[in-house]
Length: 263
Picture 1 (cartoon, one colour):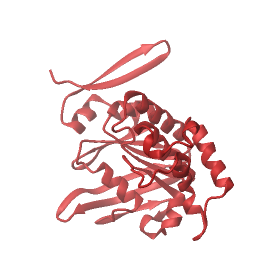
Picture 2 (cartoon, one colour):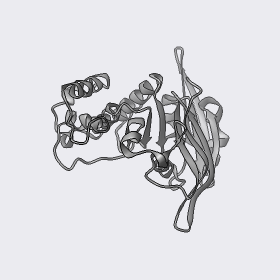
Picture 3 (spheres, helix red, strand yellow):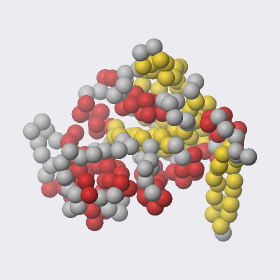
Picture 4 (cartoon, one colour):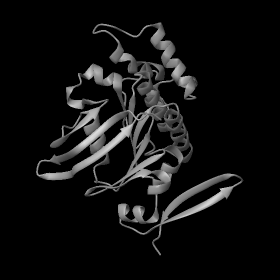
């Protein structure tokens, strides 16, 4: 992992009208890190991703991508640096899956340019790496939710960005497709890509990343290495309910998981 800072959030405040979502928030993410953002509904996790992407301007403070203010990026330049995988996406037309993936090449094309054979080869290669090449000719609107999520990941990778934001990438997915998406996010992180991922599932953090930031209604509660920050005390404070952590072993593999202690 490099010491190069890819995303820097400095003294950031965001408000909707008179309602402040969070204020004086500070966060740094280095090249090759996978940062998971945990926190209850309404604490501002998705809002933070939208601010990092430049979609929502801050009320105060600043956000830098690779040392440059996010607001100073032109749209095409930013798209080469940053990819964003949303919770849900519906295609207005029944494009094939490979056409959706190939749309990721748009930032690299001229104003009147269109994808060529090399762009198609890249799209197909990325789909192969993610195990979804068999979906290339399938209509995007007809495949499953988990498959659509993997297609969106492939489209984002086709941009060849330095940083990828994932907003609740496993929401609405069944058990198998959650596992597939998490496995591929972990592979991307291990390949050196910088990732920031929001999640409503604390147990997923143990499967994908090496760092976690817990958000409450007043900002960051704890931030650091997963094994150090994922404690019963921090989880209980973050979610407002008692949380217990359990551990099991199967051979040499250690598994940890948490559960609310409601008894």
